[in-house]
Image (cartoon, rainbow, N blue to C red; front, side):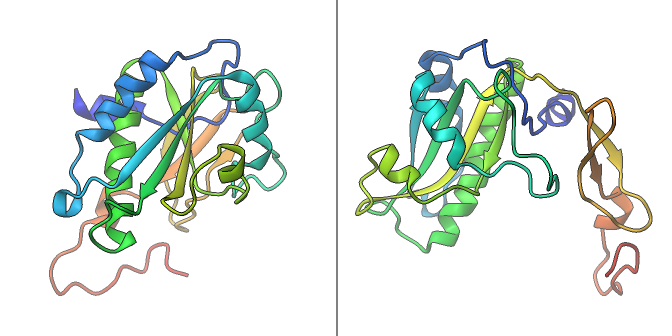
Length: 204
């Protein structure tokens, strides 16, 4: 069952914009993020919920969506996310280096997205954003640092996993029907024995 949920939990970049999410659902998902492990148990992550459509529309132009899809500017009107979760680092609670907090961030956001997928809600973690989002959201920059934006909503696209080819190309792509394809490295390529020479498959 956990494997099925992990496979189901895919990055979605086109949403059913007219199907909104309320703060009750987002609070439940953030609660799952809260329960993840944290280095030194410092728990330095904070979250901001955005469900207001007007504010979401103002956030949208400041986001970068898909690095490998160079000709795609992001979801069109009607396919934009109806909600966001803004992930912040609380500097007052960060007891170790920021790199530890970013490990926490990966754990927390995966918990959130797994819980979302169990509800047929999907998201996109966005680390490419304009710095002025902090001003737009009135974030206290002396205390908080914006780490990640998670776009959330019901899926308006299909995502297919496939095995990466022998050339090792892992760039995601879309076919003519706009199905999103995500290559994954084969299991045999990522398990190595102690002292094994590096694999030549996919090396550049």
